[in-house]
Amino acid sequence: MPYTPIVATLGYVLSPDRSEVLMIHRNARPDDLHLGKYNGLGGKMEPGEDIAVCMRREIREEAGIECESMQLRGTLNWPGFGKHGEDWLGFIFVIDRYSGTPQTANHEGTLEWVARTRLLELPMWEGDRHFLPLVFDADPRPFHGVMPYRDGRMQSWSYTRL
Image 1 (cartoon, rainbow, N blue to C red):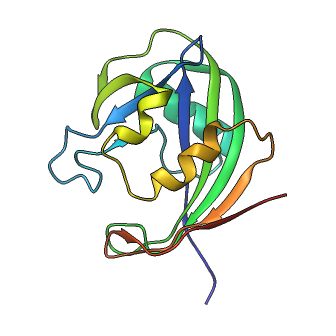
Image 2 (image 1 turned 90 degrees about the vertical axis):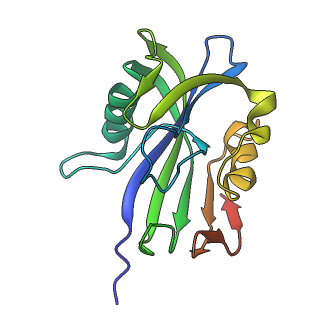
């Protein structure tokens, strides 16, 4: 059977001094699979988009800012991650320059600047604690990870860098 994941982006917007990250606290919708957790910004790719256009659109929609510079930091395959066991394939970006002023909230929750040194203290998906250090490390090579989920729980984690 062919593998047909939901393709999505996940972006981490850095403050101008690179010391903080714009995170969303998913606290707006009671039916949200991510309710109560912090996450980067992003979402599903639409037909006719390439992955960079998707990331820019999602940042515009969720934070009200325009990406001026961003780097692909990695890809993540999340088999079984969706609410009904759907597979997801994510492209992970760091946005290191933007224009505009980020909004303070959107339909999914509150946007908050969080010190990079405090990211892992936030309530988040268990798996995020494994890949976030790779997003912000000094290694210029993108990572490519696999993180299967079952019943909302991470089962394993592995990655390679080329």
